[in-house]
Image (cartoon, rainbow, N blue to C red; front, side, top):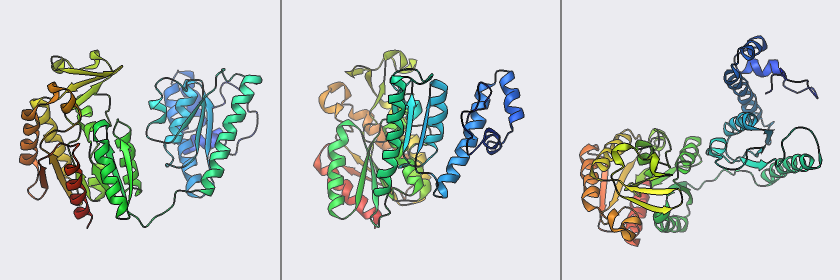
Length: 373
């Protein structure tokens, strides 16, 4: 996807720059003129769009077994943008000078492997030769392994379950129950990328049933928390029309990486410091009502069988270990607003248990199974 403006070709590519530019809706004359006026971002956009188009076509026609790229900040941005456009299971290797620190922008929700280049990629030497060779070996090995063990079609329904921290035992109990019935379950860590990854797989048809046990990413989106999965979180399963059960797991808090990230209107509220960079703010009555309205709107738009299950004795492990999080009034405000805002045909089941109790998991499993019927 290079323009050739800063160097000469070492070998002739199968897809020269003119073809990539055309696939991106442009031409090399425009590309080079953009470079003359410092529009590098626009050039990146055009050339990466062209590369994505070519790679997707290669993949769809069975001619792409893996993808590898190398670069610094700009090259990593370019390479991983193309990688993220390809489906889960396609080997993706990025040799990068910035493969450390926060790499979430490069990886996103896809299975991208980042390899630190150690030395800058500026010519061959005993260090760069090793990292280049190992990176090539990695993508070759992954492609060979995938050929032996491809993503298989299955007649089993796959159930996607979101969880976070204290709701894990509930998710595992549901998993055990459904696997005994012959279903496949996939658990996603709802940390901002997990919920998005699940919904991408729902859109691709890899997940056919959803138990959204921990839709806390919706709350993080509303209040700009650490686990923000974007404004469309909790909408994809509804649009797809697949069965979904929703619980309010972990919506009683928002995580912030540092106190200065907390919105001004919430700064007076109690913070539980769970660890370095994990500042947990309890959502109070006003926020819980707002959350209920947003969740209800998303649920009401669902095209398939949808229901809600609510534990009456607590929504996360935090209200068991920190008395400041035990706020029945806020939780009840959520429930009342949710029932008020939902369509009458959406079933809301109340369970006299905590979300970590086995009884809640049993009732959720039973309810989800009925939806699947």
